[in-house]
Length: 246
Image 1 (cartoon, rainbow, N blue to C red):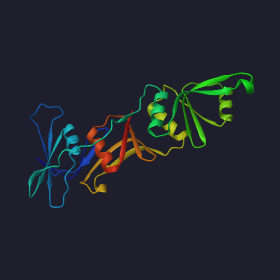
Image 2 (cartoon, rainbow, N blue to C red):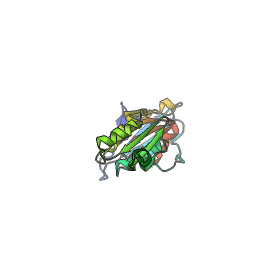
Image 3 (cartoon, rainbow, N blue to C red):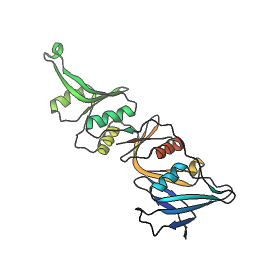
Image 4 (spheres, one colour):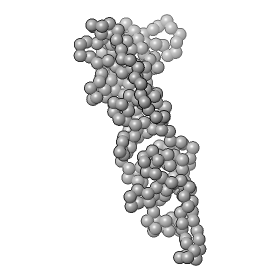
């Protein structure tokens, strides 16, 4: 049994940081990973940890027991979050990923659209080319291709006022997302994000992960790992953080 003088950090790629007063490590068990007991002593004005945080800790080998000086062992009940299924961007192709991303942003993209290059009446020849994805945003029309075009076709399309985005099925989902967001001037931040319980007048704990934050009418955090439903619910309820995965 060890007195804890600094916060514990557990989990990856999503991590949780919090403080417990005492740590008891099991040395005789064969369980992998071995379970550790964390004792958190609560005083009059201390707030309880969310059940989702304690469940997350247990899945990562730490059982948190909260002890009130007045009531003994205490704990919050299970939280019930009413959430739709997590949004998943398919990484099978650049077309499918970019279409799913733009759809989630509420931009109403179209897929497999025929773009007219030449018209028989005007040009004496009828020629169209199929775009992977097309989206209109205000005065701009963006066309996504996952294949190369000839310089002549590129010139015709750009002179018509189209903005072209070229991707490849060999590109990583992260690169495709960055390329799309930058080309369309959609505010986004790539980095490490932390969510503090104290900032929401909750118990002292912090959830952290790396990903992409996209700012639209709502904040969307895009991550490359699976997240537990209850942690997603906690992020949504406390910080209005909407999660999407790929």
